[in-house]
Image (cartoon, rainbow, N blue to C red; front, top):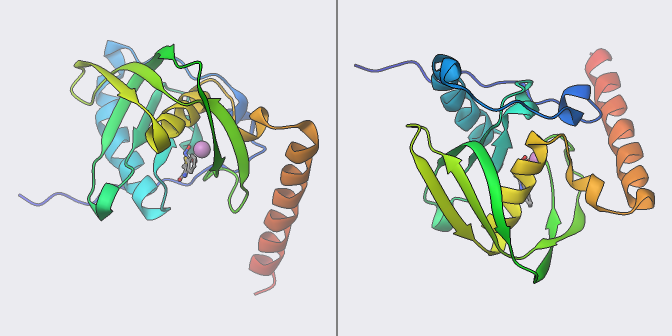
Length: 181
Ligand code: GNR
Ligand code: NI
């Protein structure tokens, strides 16, 4: 039996209070909601396109994120429920980050180069993952979202203000263009 493709959800753009609010842990009672939410989050992430998406970015204050780095263009999706960073390396790594909630804005962010993350997968099974490289960055970026933190919170106030002003202007131009036709 063929099922309908999952609905694409609108992505919240900063500044939005939902993006600044810590999300609450998923509980057993949330199972039905999660079953609907995960396919929608994957569909939204792939459509954007992005390599990760956290539930607060689609207005849902739950500790849920999806990631797919698409190594060699091949899908490698995973869902993280109640993810926790349980270890970080002292070694740091700097990488240029972007965010679907700050479209077209980029900055170098320094974070631990390696992380170990514990989470529940889409079936509710306990998992642990040790990551470096882009996956380590992405895991930390998504878990930040669940704590109301954006990548711009890791850079200087000067750079952050520049990005937030540029984003506000870009959004105003887009709104004006949309209104003008
Ligand atoms: O698509 C995304 N790309 C990205 C690039 C570098 C570091 C982090 C990311 S995550 C981002 C999608 C997003 O906003 N996830 O919350
Ligand atoms: Ni993001």
